[in-house]
Amino acid sequence: MKLNLVRPRTGARWVQLGMRTFFRQPLALAGLFFMFMALMSVASMVPMAGLPIAMALLPAVTLGLMAATREAEQGRFPMPLMLLIAFRSGRQKSLAMLKLGVMYTLGFLGVIGLAYLADGGDFVRMYLGGKAPTGAMLTSSSFQSAMWVFIGLHLPLSLLFWHAPALVFWQDLPLIKSMFFSIIACLRNFWAYAVFALLWMTVMVSVILGITALATLLGNPDVAGMLLFPALLLVASMFFTSLYFTYRDSFSAAADNTERLV
Image (cartoon, rainbow, N blue to C red; front, side, top):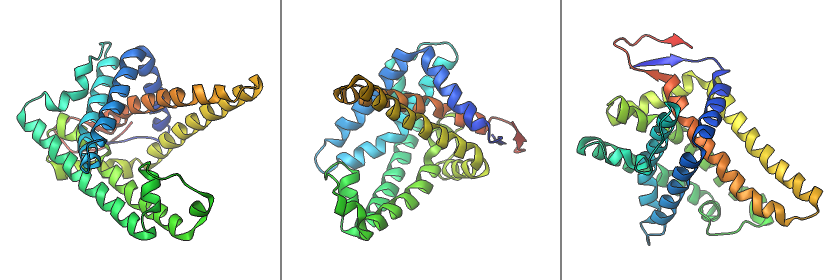
């Protein structure tokens, strides 16, 4: 395996490839994403243990979406069971993916715990959907401190696990090495990932503004309510479709460890 150094404009290419591949198999990829969301929602409903279960499954089902993208990109129809490919490829890989999920869960709970301590839990309850934010809450210094603690710690955690499931599954790397190479790839290709994130944020904001403007022109605010949620789900589905290309272009199988610029 070798790390590929990519130019900043590659981030825009990832977004383009994600959208183009999604529209090759829109029903299949959207359906798999909705299955992903449903699985996470059902897992999170388990009393007490719901959040840890959902977080532990996240690396494996994210890998499933990446594998489905690879199928669609190669002209094949991704079947629903593709979502669980991590658990259908032998005991060794299943255990490795579950261990990776447990490690991510512990990291996420640690981040949540530190954010909880920063403001007594207001931010955490809002983030997890259990408490509606108020104006006073959003402007309080403790809430903002908790928010920045969460962002500052969750970002490196996300980078550690960005490529780790794919590296464990496709490259057979040990867990710690997969996390190490994941964050190194993100940092070495910082500008490509920055362009990638900025463009997806732009797409999401554009969809929100477009639907809001349409509702205003029609004089019917209910239109925004009806269209906004499914439209954002489709954008999220395309975003997850694009994740495979960030992995594919950041790493490649090779006998040597030299780096190349693509």
